[in-house]
Image (cartoon, rainbow, N blue to C red; front, side):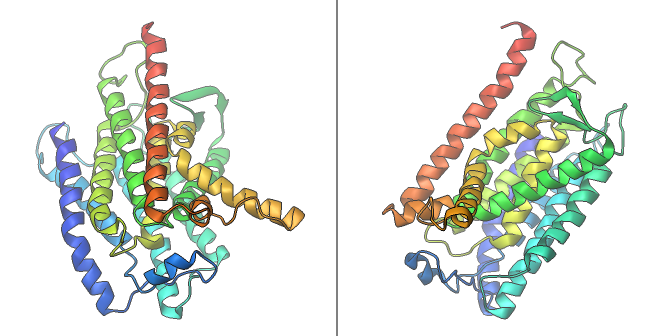
Amino acid sequence: MRSVLIAAAVGLVISILLTPIAIRAFRRQGMGQEIRDDGPESHLSKKGTPTMGGTVIVGATVLGYVAAHLAFLGESGWGFSATGLLLLFLMVGMGTVGFLDDYLKIRHRRSLGLNKTAKLVGQLVVGVTFAVLALNFPSDGVTPASTVVSYVRDIAPLALGPVAFVILAYLFIAGFSNAVNLTDGLDGLAAGSSAMVLASYIVISFWQFTHHCATELIEGCYTVRDPLDVTLVAAAGMGACLGFLWWNTSPARIFMGDTGSLALGGLLSGLAIVTRTELLLVVLGGLFVAVTLSVIIQVAFFRATRRRVFRMAPLHHHFELAGWTENTVIVRFWLVTGMAVAFGLGLFYADWLSFVGL
């Protein structure tokens, strides 16, 4: 448990201390956010706010994870794991795709960076590499990922072959990274929501660690690889998000940009894959799903009828144009995320109760 606290504390401290340094550095370099011309008029005042703050989130997460290991260096059975390193690879890889997108936006002074094809290719390379590697590195016959579709644990009838799993994993990773990216439209919305979902994965992975089949062969135990190391990654990520949120909350002094949103979306999807809770992430990250669905519905309905369902998509802009203040939208969406996380954890625990007969 001490290692988990260290990972979270280091991620928090590094993020909260380095973010103002990043703000000054990015401002000197003229790395300001470009704002959509067709967005809410209230957002035009945010033009020029430093972006690419996601570099701090990614760096703080990695350093928090490393620090937790260095604190107990030399202890028997303690070391970096394949699962933890793969999660960091996925986060850094998706963050790199986002960084390129942010850089092009700044260089060309427009709100569009990488074109859709280039972004999808980048996500494809990172997502497929993660999925392929996650099916390797067995420990006691258990690999970081499973080819079985999971909910709160693997669903045996939904077993896939390796190729089908890699395809599904890529779609899952790309889908959630883009979902967090779409949600990152208001000050602190994506960072606060991501922190709550990451907190839920601290609970889930630590519960799996304390009820791991490798150490406690009881009814309902969990067959996963490196659950404690997964907890460290989630804790470091949560701390990094909270530290960044100190500076990103309204009025934001820095934005995470695609660097942060794609990295966090990749990390969340990776956590779901290695903890065997893929479908549960749809519940835990219900806000991200709802925001993405609002865009899909808006585009599909407009193409079919030339009319709009929402005043503007993504969903948070609809409520802004309906008269809600930005802070009202943010806080209420945080509340929605909190309820989704509570409900998702309830489903996870209910599954456990079904095994112990309560």
